[in-house]
Image (cartoon, rainbow, N blue to C red; front, side):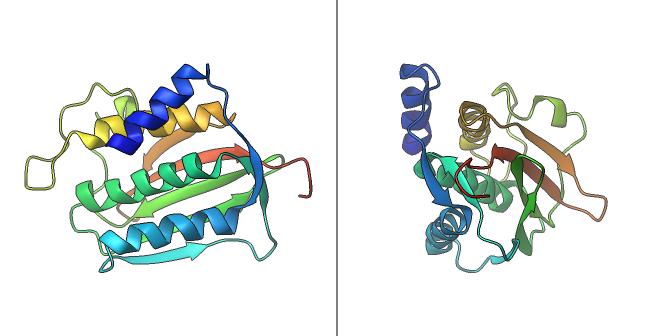
Length: 173
């Protein structure tokens, strides 16, 4: 939660300006997964990423925080979860990163408000915590500061997905 609040404060303080560097997406994802596995080593993670190295112009710490928040939310709110899948697609001028789980999915009435920070807890058991509302709102702010969009969906095969886009770097893709 502290990391989330510091991230929002930094973005708000700088008027949405972020310090970008060209980074390999594979390394940013790998770092986020490594940090996630320290707390959730029992959760299976699969990664579907193109073979070609993808260079993105981002603040790697902030994008890593987005990925961590999304994976944490899968664990804490994806009842019945057995696996998290991170999927990367290359679009014309951007990449699309999806974090998907095979848990219970989002209640349909929650989807339109998932990122605005106004939702009550989605679960009332031992995993419910206020970090979801703050974390998803922070994710939206970070992705927007990078020129991308963030949205959520329920998967037809079950479970939930949160997808965001980030523009590709102009230096090599």
